Length: 124
Image (cartoon, rainbow, N blue to C red; front, side):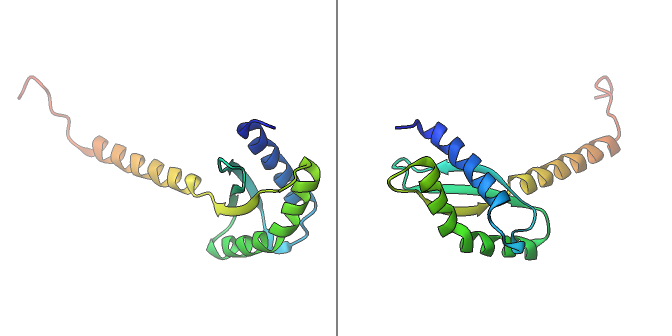
């Protein structure tokens, strides 16, 4: 029995490879699998992904992943030699967008701080 982290890494690698090489769906777009997290009982694998493009492309990619999930699950079971492959659930990874928003907020704060007049501590 594999440690949960090791199994997550293997599922991540295999899913990435399968999506890149064997899933022939043009609606996938430029998709990158960012992480895989398994539940404690290893019954569900939550796969997080990012897609290059706008909301329309993200929707197309989500639908393409849903269509391919049965194939991907079957291939995982075969290649990992599991009696029962985990159910695959795909989630859009929004951490990059959230990080960009935070970066923008910090830049705005820095601009505001630079625009304020400098108050000398001795004058107060």
